Image (cartoon, rainbow, N blue to C red):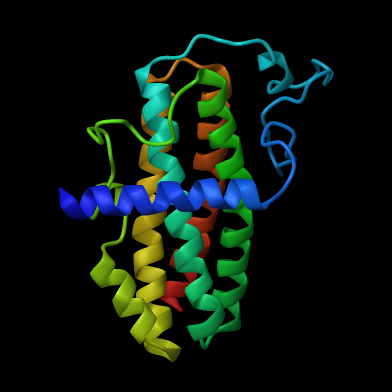
Amino acid sequence: MGSKKYLLGACAAAVIGLVSGCGGDVEGTAAPKSSAPAAGAPASTAASDQAAPSEHNADDVKFAQRLLPHHEQAVVISRLAFERSADPEVTALARRIHDARGPEMKQLMALLQGWGEPVAPPDHGDSIGHGDFGLLSEEELQGLEQASGAEFDREWLRLMTEHHEGAVEIAELELRDGVDSLAKLFAQNAVDGQTAELAELRSLAAG
């Protein structure tokens, strides 16, 4: 449990740092597929239709609070490939994963802010830690940091595959149990995007 709290706390702090360091309002940040609606935006998209506050439930909150630290760790794992991978295709995929997670994290932060909910559960009862939804342990991260070349690429692909499978599971739980339409839109985008990345990860792992 102590490791679990540490992982969530560190990730939550990093999420706040990333959001504040990117400049601009969270709600007004553009994203590839969807974003939290900006004031005065036209009501021509599904996201814009959610400009007014909508009902949400505990599962919507858990979705955002779980996926935020999960995405933050994906950024950390991706950055390791920039320095340690021997395969240009692995490095290119890591870059795309890295660049996609930042806007998604801002979307999730905007949801929680709009609901008046904290980044992390106050009692850590719904925290995610080692083994939950593919989240890597400190030992696994240290192993990646110490590996290089082809050995690094094999382990990176394996662990990132498990990590993506966990993210898809988090999103699918939201699609099943959540009620907020914007949160469910983000969840569907997560399923679609990470399923496509999973196909690339598995293809690279198969050689």
